[in-house]
Image (cartoon, rainbow, N blue to C red; front, side, top):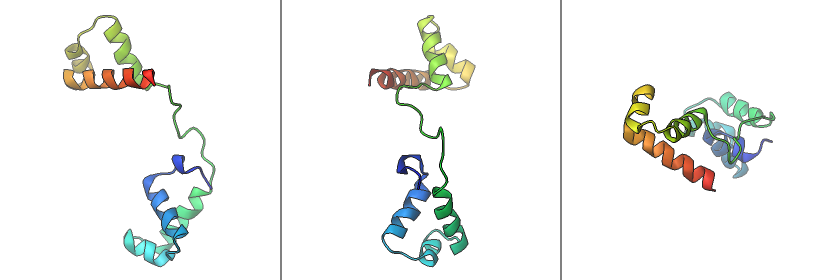
Length: 103
């Protein structure tokens, strides 16, 4: 079975219910799905996944680009126009990226 960190929330919830002894019909009813869907979800969690969890210090392309432009002295409002978002959003991304790098 896959590492729980690599599973989607639905998959984690289904597996938790299976571990609690809830049958597939009841799980399907709770998610408004057929029991076949629940069986497929359980089967898919057994398939190994690669590259799903990003490394702790790895930055997304957006984060790298914003940090580079900010280091070059470009104003957050100008970066926001380039990405079609607000200057406040760019500043939040910059702050969260710096926090991510500090960890």
